[in-house]
Image: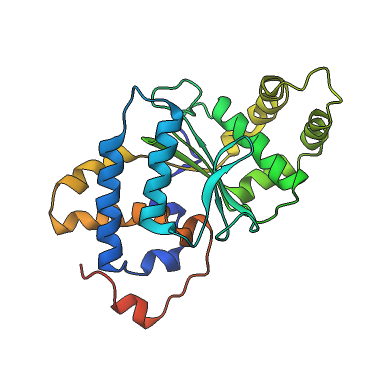
Length: 252
């Protein structure tokens, strides 16, 4: 039994979960999510899917307020502000559909997670960025979302791992190839703790039925997903839970 996997609703701040979405924002989310699903092409490369994912996030939530772009070797990052002067808040590793490097619910220790560990340590140790909020691995269909506090506890606070990482970055080891870091450094470190790594997991295809069916009752099924992708959750913005925000939302 896998005990470290949680659902989108469980991952959300309870105060944020109680706030009713604004109807037009929620409808925008549904429209863009349908577009995202329709654009997925299993024969296309990772770059194609990174682009449609970026469009989805920008058009639905982030706009010009939070920059989404590549940074160095990271696939995608969401910044905590509108330009690169701000810190990185979210690191996303995007894989093509049916890529065997993608995480599996019963095996997190794949190349995608090993890459996230390297990117996280570069941000956290080299760039001294303490404002990372989440790390994500996705093939657009499946999503694995890790709170950065979990990565900090298991990786940034692992003195042996940080020493190996620092030596690797300073080219003090026998090779500076990233595959060496993944196999010889990250993989053993993850092996020791992967059953303790709490992660949010969902398959976006499971929500497609609620998008297609226009029954208003289905909106309840989509609200956790709507909130999960939002900057309020992924960038851990302060939750403003007042009577106006509760009363001006969707009526269910």
